[in-house]
Structure formats: structure tokens, C-alpha cells
Length: 527
Image (cartoon, rainbow, N blue to C red):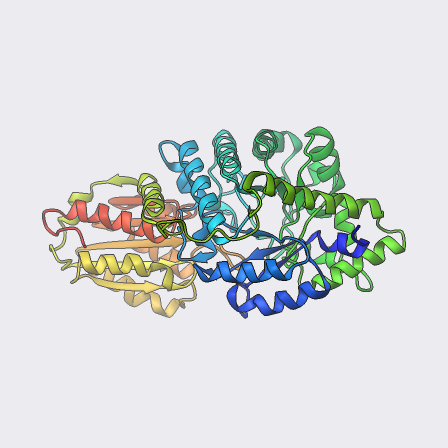
């Protein structure tokens, strides 16, 4: 029988690789995690920044080093390509929800993710996002949601879970009880949701209840305060009224409750326990089973043991949480067989991960999500067939590198157009020359790339917004919005408007193809 410390360690999942500064690949992080396993046999890993097929060797090495099989979880909302370079990357969930058959596309996303995850050695998708996109200014959920309509989010969430389960992938609906109403990012602060209980019951909670009904394996908590659910000051992650009374007692959920990352600022105050206990006992007492991504996993485990010794945490609660993790591992063996924890690697054709069929599914979803309004052919007739007289301005809410695929396609399509790329860090002094060039042009194309991102404002900067407002209403203006369209109201005045609720390269290609179609016969589509 394992010791109490070993049971506590099973409740802890640690990073392999990191997207936080200083970034490190999963493959280069193996030695650190292997050293941890020698004295702290954690229950699983949270995978970041891996590469196909090297990730299979890295995970196989750690599975062999671990005294118990490791569950490997990953944020793969957009497919395995979101964390594993070389795997298939799908568009954001809102693009799936914008398509003509969202349920079918959600199921294809889940099936493809399951197949590539099995090959890579991933067992547990920290997906789907079950948040409803209620607040237009939301900086962190937004296009990660299947949409504004609760019924659509319910249907897509359920379809994803059923398809994933049928294909051997564990799932986690997130972020309970809903993060779609916030105007702040829980990575950077502790948001408060002021909605009353009737609004939560009508909009926010139904997708999570539907996830339970669809046999979701786990629910991930949000680091948000929701007074209407019984706690006016502390985040949902430490709310017994949510995790015990509602989820366990009313909904009858018997699966795993997993915290969002414990390195986020939304849970920072709960980490400030005296001594060596970084708040872990408080989370388990509230009803959390898996402590995800602590900065110091050894301190978490030692803190749980100490909390049991001094009476702050019942030993039975540690065993209960540990057993739920073990149940997940048993379920994985039941659905995947005796080699459940070993990366499957390539299939006979060598083309499972990032294969042509999977990539075609992803590209088709981006194309189907395109929304076009206006006279594209008329707009293209304002400038020469090679782009003479056209100014293209590419604005990104993050790094300008996000715009590169579209920039390359524009250059191939309109090689004589003048192109400008401005990132979110652009200063006010950079805007006037671009505005002047745009206003003097026969036609202008403004492409806005707006994507939610942790620890930073997900929208365009004030100088970027001013630029959009100043040129989108002029004659011959076209505006393309990749990602979040909220907050870009001036763009509605443009002659041509194209929107797609994702920023992935496939969507950039789809927009370029539509522009090529408008330009024909002036200019053939770029190769």
C-alpha cells in the first residue's frame, strides 16, 4: 500500500516543457522532471512546447523512470499541434462554432486530436472549453469559446466529449463555472463575476452540466470569484459550495476536479499559507482532486502531508483525490489496452501526426468559418492586377510574427502592393506615416490579428485602433479580422469586410484564396 506522501504526490501534475520565460522544450526538460520523480512520484505531466516525433522518446523515458504510470495532459483545445510542433493545428473553437455543422466539426476535432494524442503519448486533453462567450471585452476566453449561444456551446461541448471518449482520449471541460463573462484575465489577476444565479443557470452553467451528462472525465476550475454561487471573496477553485454542493451533490459528478494552473495570479492569494504549505490543503478541502502546475511540487506534497498531521486536512480526503487519479489511469487502460501509457508513435504509413487527411480537416474548418460581406470584385478593381495602388496594413495584438503567413500570401498575390506590419508594441509615432500612405492609396487593406493570450491584453493597442478607425471608412477600404472581432466596430464602414474567428495559418490562407478569387481575372491565385 502506498504511503500518504505517495498518495499526495499522485494528486500533483507538473510541467514538462514551458511556455513561460525562460521557455524550454519538453524534450530539453526531461532530466529535470526525471530527477523530481526520484523522490516525488507525481501523478502526471502537463506537456508544453514539444516536437514530433522527439516527444515520444521524451515521454517514454519518463514513463520508464516513474514508479507509477504517468498521465500526460496537455492544453490541446486546437488539436495536438497546439503543443506539439509538427502535429495538426485546428482553428479556434469559435471558428468551429461558426461553421455550418458545428457539432460534426467538434467531433472531427476530437477524433483527430485523440488519434494524434495517442501517437504522441498524450492521454488527457484539457479541453473542450465549455465557457460561453458572454463579454465582448473578454481578454482570455473569447474565440476559445464555441460561441455566444449557450445551446451551441452545449452541443459542441457534448459532441467533443463523446467523440474523444469513443477514441480513447480523456477530456476536461473548462473553466468551471464559466470564464466567459470576465473583463480580466485570471492569469494576471482575480476576476469577479457579478451575474446573478438565474443568469448563470441560463447561460454559463449548462455546458458544464451537459459535459457531466456526456461522461466527461474531469472538470477544470476557474480562478474567478462568483458570489452568486456562495463565495463572495474567494475563487471558484476553493469554493466548496461549487465543487461539493453543486457539482458533486446536485449534478452527481463522480470524476476528477482539476485546478487551473497554480502559477496563475488568480489563485496567488490562496498560495500564501504559512510554512511550507502553498495552499494545497485548502484546495483539496474545497473539493479539488488534481493540483495542476505548481511551481514547487515537492513543497505541495510536503504541505499536504503536514496538513494531515496537524489536522487541517483529513487523510481520507487525500486518499479520495488520489484514488480518483488512479481511477483515471484504470479507465485509460480499459479503453487503450495494456500499452495505454506508451506513446504509440507512427502508424504503418508514418502519417498519423500531421498527416494530409488531418490537415485537410483543419483547413476545411477554417474555410467554412469565413464570413464575407461587401463587393470583393469591386474593391479589387480599384488597383492594378499586381497590386499597384494598394496599401496593406497588418496589425497584430501580439508579435507581428503572427501575420507572416498572410503577408507572404499577399506578396505572392499582389507583389507591387505596399505592405506594413505593426505589432501591439507599436508607438504612436509609427502610425502617421502608415496612415498617410493608406489615405493616399487607391485601395487599402487592413488586416487585424486579435488573439487571446495569457498575461497580456488580447486586443489591439490604442494606436492600432486609431489607425483602423481613420482608414476603414475611406473609399476603397477593406478590413479583414482574424480572431476576435469585438471592439473593431469602425471596421463595419469598410467596402469589404472579411472575418474568421481564428488566427491560424490555414485561416490566413483561406482569406488570401478569397481575395485571389475576387481579383480574378486580374491576378491568378498564388501557388
